[in-house]
Amino acid sequence: GFSLIELMVAITISAGLIALITTSFSQQYSAFLFNKKKLEINQDLRLSMQLIKKDLQNAGVFGDFSFHNQESVIYSESMEVGATCLSQWCKFDAQTVGVKSFNNDADAALGSYSSRLKSGSDVLRVQLSGSKIAYLDPQDRQGANCGSSNDCTINQCNNSGIEYLNKAYFINNGIESTYTNYMLTSANKAYLLQFNGIPFTSSDIHLRSGGELLLNFSLSNGCPSTGKVSIEIESGVNGIAPLYNYISYQPDMFTMTLSNLITRYYFVLDSDGSNPSGLYVSSVLPNGNMSIPTLISSNITSLRLEYVTDNNISFNQASTQSDRYTLCTTTQMNNISGSTYCNNKWRRVTGVRIILVGAGKPISQEQISDTVSEVVGWKI
Image (cartoon, rainbow, N blue to C red; front, side):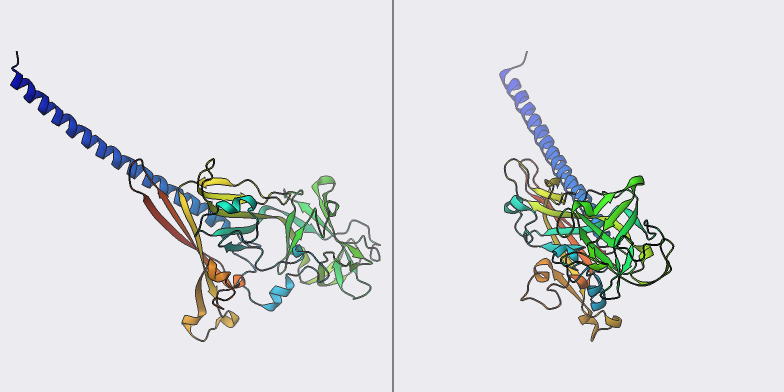
């Protein structure tokens, strides 16, 4: 048998070994949890970055932030749809379509979720055209003698001698005809159109037989009606319908396409008890309402944007090289009393830097934090 002393020695040694094994296991398990959480945060940061980058790269009219890095007055004015239109949707505002960010819910789009917006994090709005488009078919449907009829695709306005688009027939390639907001674009012009509301109604755009889309413009004797959208065709028209011999200038009618306008918001919310904090995305639904925010990652704690603005784009010249570009934060872009090179210079943006911060805490351990940033640039 064992003596009492031998038994006590054995117990002491066993206890020490068990404590050593337990401590080693605990340390290894803590290291495992730490690395697992760190990897999870890193993966979420990369995934979130890819989602945002993809939308930013397609922002604007044709992608690559088209029409937004142009300060030219000609481009700005050419985005107008009609001088008589009273609705905000009647022209392409350079601050409206493409990329823009806010320090808070500046345009009230997020509604009740605004109270949960994470302090110090930006709200990013990205607008882009849908992947499905409808192509303009300039051929009339009313026969060869429709030159004096307002049913023609193009009819000369009796008061001004200007050609206006009365009707637009589109060969549908899968776009949603129930959407509220659309983009009508051509080789050198772009228009923002809103249906199922002022100035259009649901009857102004509809599917015809064979999947064709018909877009009606409100005209009186070929001239635009007050408060309605009208699109001026700055081109010469020879011949008679339906076989026009177009001499097209601007916009080139043969390049006109219609597509859905997609608007997405990215933002970071605090927890409300039922829903976790993290990075969320919300989209404008076809009826114009906002969708319920969808959680992308509960590990993202901050989203910030910085913009590169081009101060002198005329003939690619600047007084000095250091004066050419300015790096602006969201606050500076929206600050009226701030830098003149930043405030409201969305049309001069040539690139944007996305900054995502992720953080998490493994069980009974210190907080882990990581940051990733990437730059998206556009053609000038």
